[in-house]
Image: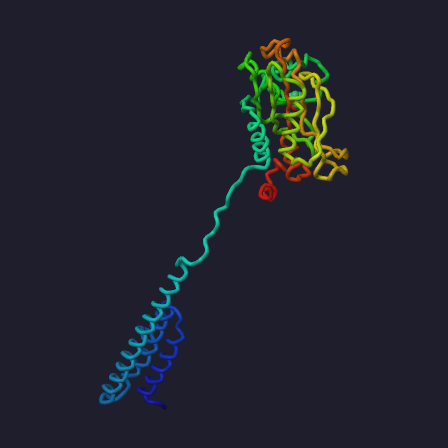
Length: 344
Ligand code: PHE
């Protein structure tokens, strides 16, 4: 049987090997209790000291002390090394690498409707039209009656209306009531204004129509304004907006507030004129209504129709955004799908 000193030496070697396995500071603390603590293995072995003859005890005590001191030194070294490694790891984890490429801030951009609206406004303001602001909530009188839609006039059916709970107060179905506001503000001065804004119609939502959309109204009033001025203005607009090569056509039409009235179509870019659901299989997409301001409307605006004449037009913006940007369904515009908004 081995002597107590031999057992102590064996324990020293075991403890040294075990300490090398400790990977964290708490593990070294557990190691300390296991070998050197009050209830540890070293204390356990030294309990046998009492059974030894008195003359052998000092040698054993000395050996035990040396082993303990040696183990404590190794422990200190190990703990210092671990503390260093743990600090380095923490620094590396929290540290900022200033050589890494930065993260690009996400840039917002204008909604495709707004982009198109601004393009159209830019072309028109460069022609000399001024922007005139006009409200989205109107009276029946301004939206219809003063524009020569008598009550019960069948042309009211062209524009199904959202009513409010207040009698005769409605959401404007077109930007044309702005014509009256502008004329009443400026008469008898000549006018050249555009009115961009939202309009509302109680329509079935389909690939080509929404309940809310944007229009730009245009109005020119003066002493010698003719249909040629209207035609020149609109052809010039279409050429700038869609490029000189694009086909457009004037088609006779009817609006109560203009006489004569026309509609302007641009050949459908979505199908190249072959016909699709957006152009209702006609190959053409209507972008605006226009005409010479009706004498009754001039009079309602404060102009003498025997002296003054004028032209007006009203263009839909989403239709044009579809044409210019190749969108085949108007519902994309206000469904807030970021994939759509990012693409355009
Ligand atoms: N207000 C008409 C519409 O919304 C368009 C239009 C405006 C027609 C001006 C002629 C003159 O359909």
